[in-house]
Length: 170
Image (cartoon, rainbow, N blue to C red; front, side, top):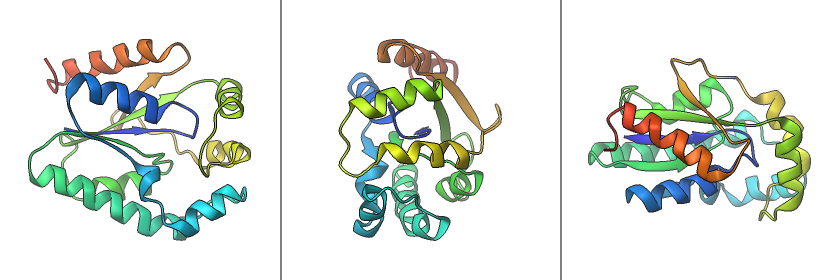
């Protein structure tokens, strides 16, 4: 299974991805690591990315997903995947049973508070409003919804329950 932890910045995609990787042994890739330098500079300056900016980045991430899927290997990817078209690009022609999205959600005020307290190489906290406006909420048939309102361990337990129910882990 390719598990994509999605959502706006500050929802704990990297934290949960690392925790889940430690438990499952699945490799974890942080989508932010694959942004071109121009995208990083734009975000650091407080400017939101547009579809044109994201296209090459999403293509790179799809290549990583296809590589793991082609080798029948599981992996975890942290990626905002805010729009349906971005999720479609990431999945490509892979079956829904191969690529599973998990939307990490919390109250926007809680996310904003978290963003103010953390340091991120290029994600300007002022971009949260833009990301929330861009987010196209996936349907229940497209993504699991995982609450990140509590401690990361609670979110991890919820995620593990979904993975067990899907037969991805024992």
